Image (tube, rainbow, N blue to C red):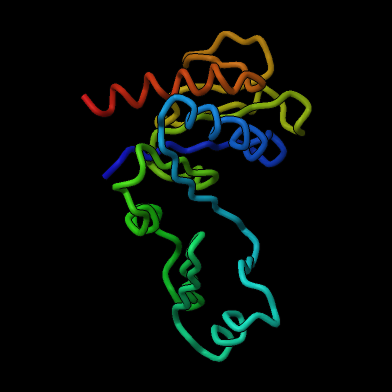
Length: 170
């Protein structure tokens, strides 16, 4: 299994904003990135009116939509157990990846970067990373028990991940 690294933090800390800068920075370093994003919303990646949507809604348990540019597998899971991150990661083609970044799943027992942004509605006094956190990514100057990285410097975060990734492949 390839390394999985969580990007976690409270709502409004900028997880997606950081990832939009971080993924290209990692790609520039030759690191092939997969991403799993957790959402608490009832989401739909298909569009009403499209054939694939109509066929899925007709009762298909799984629908795979494919073109020469990309493919996507949609699986209906209303009666399934809670999401299993390891299972989801195993569905990815790991031959084409060096790392899987995970946005969310903050309670999983995986290495993670904990994001904290001043002004995002939480006090720094509430900051409590779990034992799986490997760094604090923040916009404040703070002495902390973990490495502290500037949340606004995607290159610095990418450098940290690259070094961490090399240790995983030893």
